[in-house]
Each structure stands twice: as structure tokens, then as C-alpha cells.
Length: 111
Length: 117
Image 1 (tube, each protein chain N blue to C red):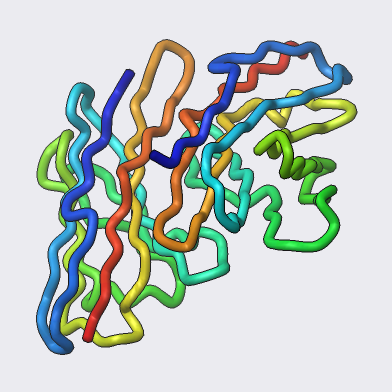
Image 2 (cartoon, helix red, strand yellow; image 1 turned 45 degrees about the horizontal axis):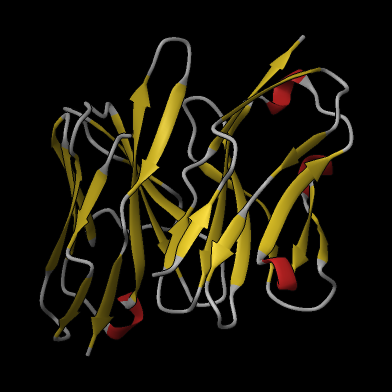
């Protein structure tokens, strides 16, 4: 069965620290990959997406993600986090038949 | 962990008919539920925000008379696609928010693939 795994349920960082959130999926075919962010009390917003081409994808607010096909991974990174990055982050995989979300990673930033 | 159940997972209907999609939070009370749709090769698009006991807030461009949302209880929100047309064929997914101590978590339904023929 297709699945998406986000390794960390809750990550706590200090401002200016670097961030990497893991995402692994299990699906052998062609996929489209997404990272979404949900700020407290708000709906999902798209951070970035990968459909094809350069596996290093740059998104909004300084986020980037790298698709490593051999590892079935699509980790999200940011070199220096800010307090305003406090939110829940979701990795999602679209295999054309359905979209599957990871369980989410809550990111807390200490001022 | 919390579970959100969305039903049906797949539905095929004739043009002109209506389809109801249910989103249930199984083990928590969801004060807010969101409804999204996804077109092929695109990201999710927010359709509406549903708060229990009040009218849903629709995003610009989403027809409220066509996509009826009812959030009658803290565990159930429904989306009814009225007079469906082939262009309504899409993947619809709901999410429910649970308020914790100092945080809010979101949980997603499994999604509904709607095909209108």
C-alpha cells in the first residue's frame, strides 16, 4: 500500500537554526511531491512542489526540498528558521490516483 | 492518533445529479474543517472553511450554491456537489483541526475521487 512517512512528530528549534524535515514515501511509479504548511488556525498553503526536472526545488519563504528518487525521499530544508515558521508541515504524494498526506510535523521555534 | 474518515473514497455519478461527501472526526471534536479539491497535476485548492454551527466561508471563485457545506456537529461536515457536471470531476479532501494545549493539529481524510459522466 502507498504510504508517506514523516519521521518527526514534533521538532523544536531556536531561531536561526537550520531545519530539515524528513519525508519518505512508498510507491514505485511516477509521483508528484508536495510540501504544505498550516499555520495555527489557518488552512493549508503550498510551500513547494516537485513534478519533474531539477530535483532540488525552491519554494516560498526560503524553503527548499530535494527529491532523491533512489531513497524515495523528499526532505524539506531551510537554512535559518524564524519564529514565524512555527506551524505544522505536511508532506504529500500524488500518485495520480490519489493524494496521500504524511502525518505532519509540528515545528516550534523558540524566540 | 486522531482519525478523520472521509466517505465515499470513490464515486461515479451522472451529470445533473448530486453527490454528498462526508468527513468525520472519529475520536475528537473538530471545531474547524477545511474542504479542498485537487485538479490533476496541481496542488490542493482550498474551497471553504467550515465551522461547527455557522455558515461555511467560501474562497473566491467557489460557488456556494453548487458546493453545499454543512457542519452540523463537532464531528461531521458534509460537502454536497449539486447538479454535478463533468468539470466537477476532481479529488476532494477534507481536513479537521483539533485544538490541543497550546497547539492545533490537522488531520486529513482519505479523499474522494469524484467522476461525473
